View: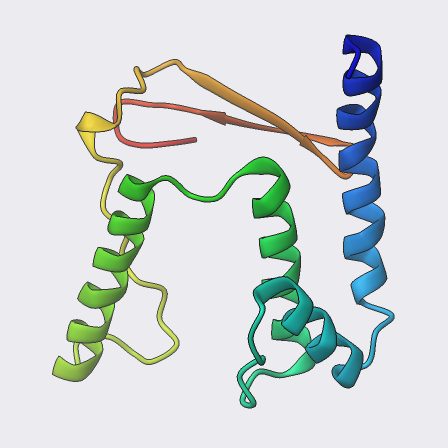
Length: 135
């Protein structure tokens, strides 16, 4: 594929993805479950409501194009979830309380001042690495 064709195709992907994600809101529960089955290649859990199905499907659609979380991020999120569950069982945290998030690990290789920029739905998002985590 020529470089011009490839860049035209990749530059149109975010636009098509955005339109596809917005289109999820128009689908009923049955259509969302069909979409889940096509995307995940398994049945959607019965307990998931329409709003959560839309969010999860949209996440996986974005992950397929832009990439999913790296292994370190997954491990950190799993640790946060385990800590929160442990606190909840001990009665230290309210069920709806937001878990306390530990600072970003030092071994991530991102120096303070590093700036991550991503455009989504026509809006630019910026995250700056600080000494204590992210801003």
